Length: 430
Ligand SMILES: CC(=O)N[C@H]1[C@@H](OP(=O)(O)OP(=O)(O)OC[C@H]2O[C@@H](n3ccc(=O)[nH]c3=O)[C@H](O)[C@@H]2O)O[C@H](CO)[C@@H](O)[C@@H]1O
Ligand SMILES: C=C(OP(=O)(O)O)C(=O)O
Image 1 (cartoon, helix red, strand yellow):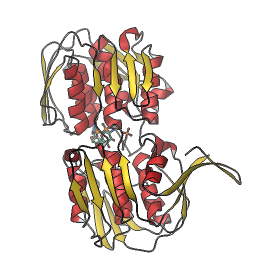
Image 2: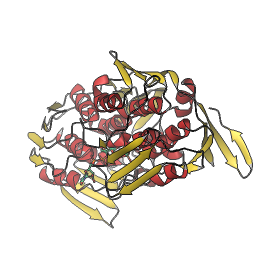
Image 3: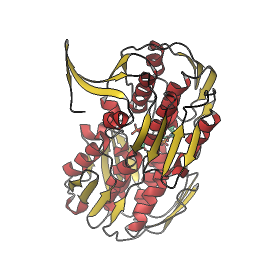
Image 4: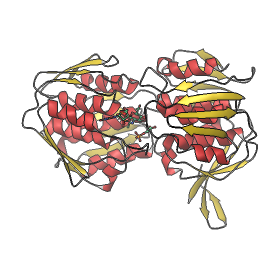
């Protein structure tokens, strides 16, 4: 079994370079299905979710190969099936984008229900509502597969009942080749939505308004091949910023878009962390003043991102006083709290609220990553503790963090990946 072993207790320092955004990459890779020529996608993060979606496309007949560590060549012209009903598809959330892309390109799709992190119910009713508004017939088969079909998608007006990242992007995909104009209202505004729109437009699509809550897509017949570079990962950046604050360190986070990080920077500043912005970097300095408690409410962008909520819980458990987190996006994103409690945190969960009594003594304990960002929170918590913490279930962390061991080591952290067999421990090429 692979684990991370972390010995904490010292401030992080130095520089870290942020990779391409997971949640943009896992949408843009399937979006290439819509294209009528090969594409080259750059700044691709080297993470397991990217490997999964690439393998899914390969299984469908696409030629997908790495040109170098961060670039993928994708030729979708050899795709020979609209069926994606495999365990790989069930193994990740973003496989739902196959529905919009296949429907847009071929007028039909048969895709297994997606997996991904477990936060309670993760419905896709708004995706299906959008496809149906475009004229598709959709059905759930055997409770496990979505089928969607339409000879000619026709532009439409969709008002989303909830602000959904996945539904907004999936409808954009299907609508980009529909006849006429589609208007999505109450659309999500995350940076990866703008990135997907920019990618589609670079291929010749006509998408306007991405980044606002009204997106207009005029369908086109042909999309040409492009070379496109994905935006930096706002959540990976937020994780390292949070880790710097949690260890009272001082780091520079490079290859980022400071604008995408405003809600995170604002919250850290409120806590007393000094943030200096540069064009494509941020300096995060928590080394001088004591940090102050704060409250957090997660919201769709530009609000505070739910994908940084567990990492901030790990930070706040080290800050004296009562902090309250209000998880406003997911019903059940506190499964990691019991792991932090094993380390001495005082956190109680009441529905969507987590009440953190920070500043209690913390001790190392064996903990597990209950999901991707929960795993990041375990690393941050372990870095705060004078002692050695073993973190299991690290496959969740590797879904979304490229070179996490190397990046934290580059900041001075004592972290290694080991393979445990019974009593034996073997360090893996870190
Ligand atoms: C691969 C990917 O990009 N994952 C991200 C995406 O997930 P995902 O796209 O699954 O999340 P959504 O934005 O769709 O979900 C937001 C809220 O809307 C609800 N909802 C969503 C769709 C729907 O059809 N019906 C419905 O009720 C959900 O239950 C949730 O309460 O955005 C989330 C919110 O920023 C992030 O936490 C995930 O990291
Ligand atoms: C929840 C996340 O991912 P997914 O939607 O792919 O499970 C995440 O990136 O934090």
